Image (cartoon, rainbow over all chains, first blue to last red; front, side):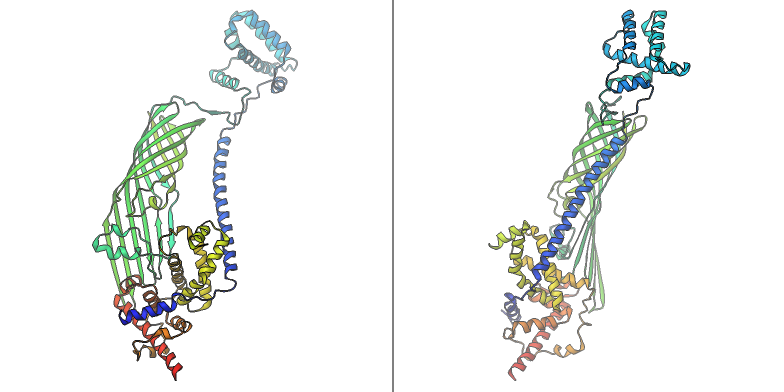
Length: 429
Length: 185
């Protein structure tokens, strides 16, 4: 042991078990700060939960808002309307008349006679209203119309022709009334939502762009680097090893930022059952990260980019249609592998003693060892614009599994869950 | 309750365990803070902030290596962060005042026994060093870092690091000699 070592050892032994009395109110102060910190965390957590709940509420609210049941046209006579809303149509006179007409013209009877009965009543009422307006006769218009109807039926001796002459609705009106009838008494918040897919075409080609909603930012006072020591070549070891020595202490502030990933994809999907389709294709993703280590006398800046190609496999479920607007849920996974990567490091140090500045730049091509696997889920909307073209958007998130890619830190390694927004255009054929 | 039990309880944010851990390690960490800070007020703030960070980041302690070493690293890093916030520059030459130049002369006794000096006086000498000297001195003696690494970390040459350390050591030895002379005269 030389003199230098003896000197150090003496000092270390002097201070090895050295203790300095702490301030008497030290723990109280600390406890207050811990309580405050805990409250802040709770507020932050509640805020997060509240935001999520608000988002869901807004989504559902929008859903209901855009799907308010269409008001039934007030084409029912006030007297009838009042009785119909009471749950039962009670027009003894008119019903009797209709029964008479039906018995005389059995050709009008069709399957689901009960329904037919109501339809006749409605048509009759509509006609009655018109008659009432035209003749300005307030008394018993429905009776008058039923009488007219029976007379017409007698005259033409053709029940179907007669009925069409009575009501004279256009095909759309008939369709609307049939739907209205079928949903009578079933009005719920979901009225108007359709689970049917109209003229669904089996294949869909889509082009889309996806942007991450979250980036990653970390600021510490321990040196940080995007690249591990094992990833650096022998000639770069001096650079690479430096910031990784976390046991080292220095006046250092390190900041690492992973930008939101940006993707472009071309996918094709095929309907497998009813509203369920399977989707696959190819997705290109761009990742960019930067790290900065600064001190009073030096500044290191690292940038890193990766181009990834991935193959997604998703299941899309079109769970509801609101008019022309459709909503779907998506769940799936993706395997990605980097096809190109670049790492660049710029280092600058200032020596006041030598009054000099030294700069160094390292730029090298890099690659990750293993493919990246992720699972994703989301909900989205699509809207037909022209022909088979649809605009669509999806909000969701992906979880990135640990792929063992420790050589280069990316948003996939540092932030396991990344929320994203996906938008594009697709073509049904 | 041993250290591992205390740490496990602290990871669950158990307040009494946190208090026990504080009482166990605060005096030692206070000594570390005092070595890196010139004034007591800053050292107290550092102790407070350090333990706040310890209790919020204790989940990241994997149990590998000494817990005291892990604690110590947090406090040392915080001390350096605090220094940066105050925007002081490590001006190794300029902050060495005129009144200290006398101590740059080589000490009469190279083999000075610093162990003979009371700890408090030694601490005062270290705390009295210019900022840059103190940093390099602490990194060499107490963190046991090689000059090559210090040079890389501080962006200076290895020789410059050695020079700073030599000056710090000379400063300390001259101060110690002065104390010893007074004691024996």
